[in-house]
Length: 246
Ligand SMILES: Cc1cc2nc3c(=O)[nH]c(=O)nc-3n(C[C@H](O)[C@H](O)[C@H](O)COP(=O)(O)OP(=O)(O)OC[C@H]3O[C@@H](n4cnc5c(N)ncnc54)[C@H](O)[C@@H]3O)c2cc1C
Image: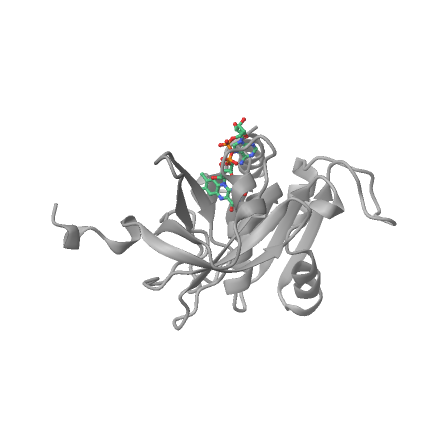
């Protein structure tokens, strides 16, 4: 195939790390400058390819955390470090501003939220599954959003300050945290796993025909998607993204 016929999103481009931000003790946001970036939709991801000096290559997918604006050539990703991982320790501990990495994208056409939609939205995140849902929160206009964010402890919350601020200030956005191992001081319930009662109470009811987006580790996504369907949500309106792992 002639090179010109390959869509740009499927060709590898060189991105420069403009900035890094520690989100938690184990997660970091990378701000990437991508000179030929043509834009993305909330929910899409990019592939990253790293090449060692001996030619060995490793490739992983990372959701885009930032909303896109027409004048922007910048993409933010947030990476959760897995201690025994191959790529995530490098992206969270070694990469510095000025470094260059190969990227391609945006990728994904199903797990996307479109700003022209007027339906209410239920977002349910497990751990780093918050990343593409944060892009949706950041791109939101006046649509009604309810976010349920399941984490182990308060120290594991990505975008903690921004979410607290948005929960206070952004009209039409509800944020509910579910802590499985440790709760903040004064929290009204002990540590709990997300269950059908939480989803029923803090998500939109099926009668409102919300668009539902669920993202996180494989098992989390399967369990939560089953809960939504059991509650009566139309399976066609339940969109899922699996990050891998248990
Ligand atoms: C579409 C898509 C979007 C993604 N977006 C993000 C994102 O925004 N942020 C992010 O941090 N990650 C994201 N991931 C996961 C990411 O692609 C890598 O899988 C992750 O960073 C682990 O890579 P690694 O090389 O460090 O670990 P590996 O060396 O690949 O794996 C190390 C060990 O961890 C296990 N493992 C792999 N992935 C996970 C996981 N997600 N959770 C728990 N255990 C796991 C493996 O089974 C293995 O035992 C996304 C994955 C997909 C498919």
